[in-house]
Amino acid sequence: MDTLRGSLLVASPSLLDPNFRRSVVLVGEHSEEGAMGLVLNRPSPVSVAEAVPPLAAFVADNELVHVGGPVQPQAIVVLGEFESPEKAGSIVVGSVGFLPSTVEEDEDLGVVPRVRVFAGYAGWSPGQLEGEIDEDAWIVTDAAVEDVFCDEPDGLWSRVLQRMGGRYVLLARMPVDPAVN
Image 1 (cartoon, helix red, strand yellow):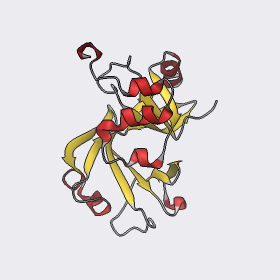
Image 2 (cartoon, helix red, strand yellow):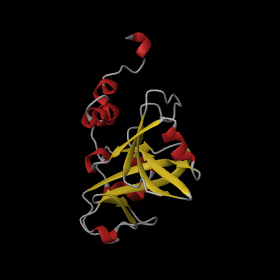
Image 3 (cartoon, rainbow, N blue to C red):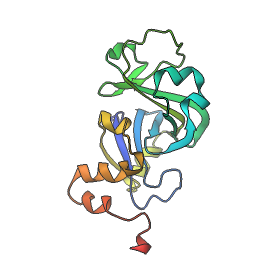
């Protein structure tokens, strides 16, 4: 089985589940036991400083917690860009990996220039994600480090499709509600 770890799942226009409509999901884990991913383009209105004070030291003052998915919405998952990848819990794509599950403010993680904090995650049971891909619910493409830390998450879905080129350029321009077109 080829792993999708480090790939992006771009919701196809036919995926109408409100948790995933026009979402871009970074696959963080993928094996025969299932898959786990984080929705990259769903910032919440809650700041990291407000929701998870110990992590405030790692992020910009106005950094928002992102809704990573509908599974365990109280669980905090943190991705960071590591200059020393061996300090990561595990690397997902490029220099981006999971911060270890317990991080103290004075812990030496090396240099972690950028951090994104998520509440919850997306999860799939064995074979479920593969089935959804076969049903064309997801478009699979390579992730880029900048996708994880994009400043304008509302436009990420369109930007990733545009980057893919070809027929995806038309999808990228599709209005949220095609009936209003």
